[in-house]
Image (cartoon, rainbow, N blue to C red; front, top):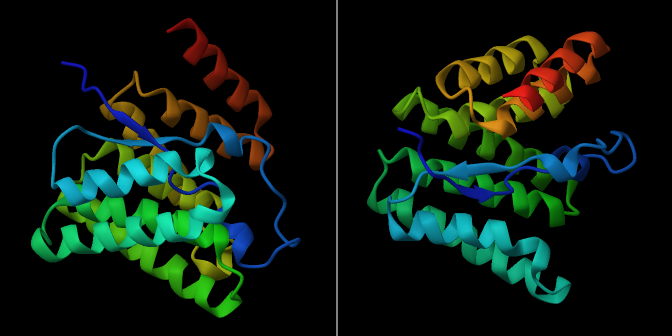
Length: 197
């Protein structure tokens, strides 16, 4: 049975906050979408919905909205520490916070914290497709000194595709990862397979 998902932008351009101008902005950033299955702690769902709506939020309101998302995710984790969606909500919220961070050292701290949150989500639910794709995208975009790992990234995304072949964001992330490694022919095959499904 196909699970309906609530789309949420979680980690676009998060690595740019670490060192503006050093890492190029990926052309596919606008296509990075993650999601959460319906249900779960209300605070976790609220945090993810805030993350979704940030791009349409007036710039002057974004910082406070992001802080409320982080707070909601933290509240969900405090009440339901073993709920993978709560951990995923924190991952998304921290990703949005990184977009607005101008403090280099704080950004590094936020990356590590976000990494722990998505790892925890997967430890609690190893088949959490959304978290697999998100973690893969994160590892594929991070520089190696912060834990970036293309092989691990590809493995996670391919695992997500094996669990849910119809989850389009996973196919997009795999194609983007392959292109970033200069594997254009393989990426094209992923694009073609996705288009014909």
